[in-house]
Length: 220
Image (cartoon, rainbow, N blue to C red; front, side, top):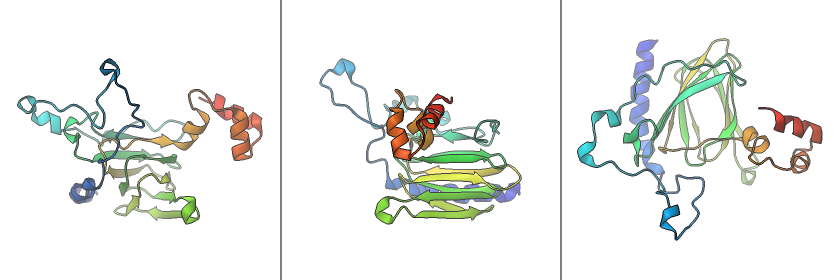
């Protein structure tokens, strides 16, 4: 199994090298408010580049993405994201990587990446993957049950989820065509915004009792 996983990772990264060139030409931030005051200005769309004479091999290296993370949490999932924040050599290259772990019945709740598509390969376990397209395409749900060696693609900006339907821990390797893909978890964005959205608005939107909305907003 270990030999198979190593081969999958090598092939996967080779594919990602071409997959990566499609994006990161647009914004890498959630917003960019214009200012003429340079004291209030920040650098956008990436990070400052290190002077080449100070670059070392460590700038292109990340050790042990596969170290297990705690999955004893409300969703039964966790993982390690390798992006420009912890692997500086990714800056401007338009790619990043995640090693995702799900406990049995563990869930990555509906979420989306505003700046990236993703491609996932299952290393261990049985995982249900699904994404929903826009109302322009009838809110169609595309889904597959994936097994080790299976690959699934999520187009940029589409709401998607992963659910471990097996009885053992599932492990998924995910590549993004952005060095800063971003993550918006729908439930947190809606019910845990800062400040909170008026409960009446959410109750009307989701056709829920306002007490249910207030409970969801109070949940940590």
